Image 1 (cartoon, rainbow, N blue to C red):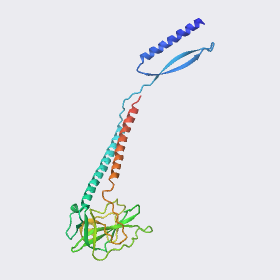
Image 2: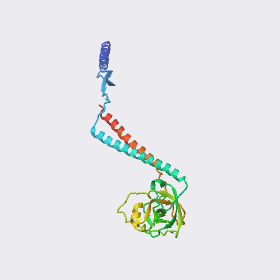
Image 3: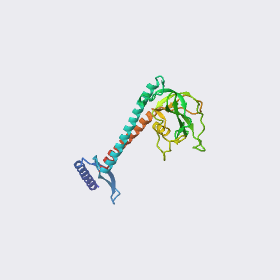
Image 4: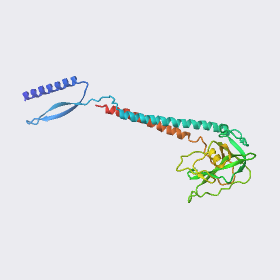
Length: 294
C-alpha cells in the first residue's frame, strides 16, 4: 500500500508539472481544462487526470470583399441622395410657407385687365370682377378630398372691362359612384360676380395614367396648365389660377390644401433614407469582421 501511494503521488506530480509546463509555454492561447476519472481494474480506486484542450483563438482582422463593398456603396449613395432630396423638398416648402404667410397677410390685390407676372402675385389674395364662361367647364380627375374620390372644377372667367380671362379653380365635387363619367350638375352664377381667392401657379400635377384626354369644353383631365387652356380656348389668359374662396352657393367644397403642407413628412422620409444608408454600411463592416474570424 505504501508503494502504491508513492507511485500514485509521483505520477500525479509528473502529470501536473507537465501540464504546468505546457500552459506556461502557451500563455497566449486559451485552454479548456476537463477533469476525468480513470478507474483501475484493481480495487476500483481512481486517479485524477488533468487533460488540457486548446480552444481556437479569434482574430479581429477585417476581410474586404469587392461585391459586398460595391453593393453597400450603391445603397449608401442612393440612401444619402434621396435623403438629401427630401431635405431640399422640406426646405422648399418652408420657403413657400414663409412667402405664403407674408403675402396672404397683405390686403387683397384687385385684378384689372392688366396682365400680371406670376412671380409677383403667387400666393397673394386677389379679387376679380367678371363673368364665368359657362361653355368651358374643365374637370381635374383623381383629386381626393377627406378620403373621397372627386374632381376639381375649373372654369375660365372673363375679367370685367378687358378681353382677358383668368382660370378659376371653383372647388371640389364628388365622383358619381355608379358612373364616374357622369358629372353632377353645378350651379354657375349668371352675369358679373366678384370672386376672391388665392393666386397659384397651377392647380397641381399628378402622375399621368394612360393617354391624356384632349383639352376641350367639359373634358375630364388629369393635368392641365394655363397655357394649354389658352391654346385650346383661344382666350388671352392671366398666367395663374385663382383658388376660389367666395361662396357662390354651388355646393362645391373649397377646403384647399396649403402648398406648403407635408414638411414633417419629408423630414420623416429623409430620416428613413439616411437610416437605410447607415444600416447598409454597418452591415458591411460587421459581416466583414465576422468573415475575418479564425
